[in-house]
Image 1: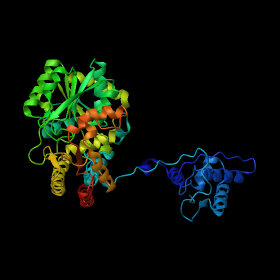
Image 2: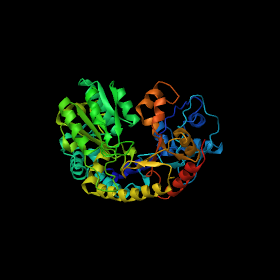
Image 3: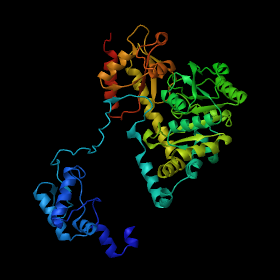
Image 4: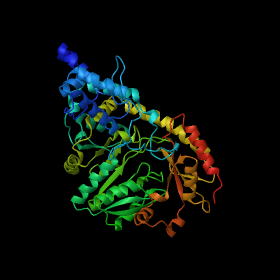
Length: 492
């Protein structure tokens, strides 16, 4: 702490320097006080000093500018009399609001706030109100007390050893992953994991990756940006059609085997074996996106595909569905031959993932607070899912297993088109996601600029991906009421 290493004079100087740093060009040609007044007035009028901004103390600003404290005090008083500043005894001097003059040309305004839907039922976003605040704060205090210097140093591009060790233990216990700390790489999200993998595979000679159809459109974009071709991998009620890989020419395949996105089906056990056999026979790679594998509500979660063949399967997970996407914490459990090139790629991407969050998550994992958070989430989200199913109209057909943070409800044949249903939901303030945009053909037509539906889509039903996790407990009932109203509204 400052009082442990500063003298009393230094402590007083630090206290006197309270307030914002302020750069001023003071022209003293007409006198020091008049020059300071002009510089401050122009800073307020030009928008560099926003309404409510705190100015440096008179002692601090006088020392910075080489002026007497009396000169600064007099300038502050004059500008307060003109209405530019607000001075109060015993309180900091602040800029009055609103600003006295229009913005000068080139003034930078803060970005507009991102508009949020009134009822957010988009898939795969966890309830922010369920975040384990107390456990996270306890671990943060421990890390900042015991490892403060470590937090501020450049870290390991592979990820902090403490987090990699904690993840190796957790993933083995909870997801059946066969790995060790030296085979784990920490990233800032699955999108970065996939981007690094795709570029590494492209550098090694891979030309195409098979992706599930339907599947996440963000995955397609990451693969295409790496210069690879995307080969659609059909999905049926047993998951990805592994048999179609034989004639496709893919050097790798990306699957969501625990809970296929978006159909919600798990990959059949026989297809799991067939998929790893294909990878061994073709010297190919399987990328497993275990995006919400912890959340299964009717039985024990399905274990990771990676356990069948750790030398052919890259296991990818993240904290986005458990803690929140804003934490930017994710991991890959890699075959040994991919560790070095992926660590190199990570270093050149952003050097390393932020150390503080890594160490805090490592502590949360080691103390099993993460396990407790997951178990509580299963109970909460299972109840929410059951409540959602009771509120859906019988004309919708729910697909997939009871798992994850969303349900897929397909629309009836001959009923209103998907786009019309989504528009009606939006009119009621409800944000969902449509199934059609996740189909590969739809993505290709959108990229090509065609606004017209494709005839092939007519044979495949539209659907709604309805999330049940994003609203808080207090907001969820109102969101379901709005959804019910939208889905019961007569549509053309």
